[in-house]
Image 1: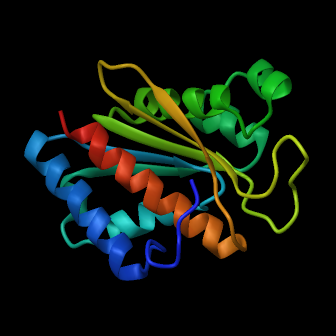
Image 2: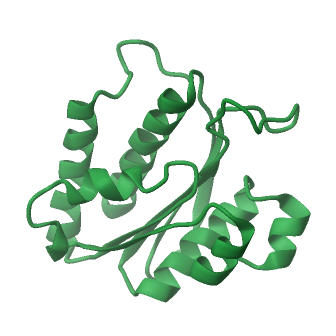
Length: 171
């Protein structure tokens, strides 16, 4: 998903997206949890920048290493060995693990390659998997390919994660 200059998410836009997520979470009386790798807690930060976020935000886990993904989110070591950290399979296990461990009503998980290094021909810089799951529902993930430097990839990931979380909260 490439965004043009008009769509690039400013801090103001990220706050608007977080407010939309907060409104829906409050409306449905659901707690939100995040599981983040390439964004380093930025999704949780944007959400908890809102006053009163403790009423609808449960927890955020930042897990960069394989060991952290396994310990904090229950990602199976075989999944990481077979598919790698940046994969649909890992994103799905991250989001399911976040819901299971923290008891929230909805979760979002992100794993990707923000750069500037770490990319491969199969998984270039800007490759990001985002997964969502609502308690009692099925986890689903989407692959994104973002352009730009590290900050741009991370900012675009935060915007896409929040947009998808809002959609997950909207029946």
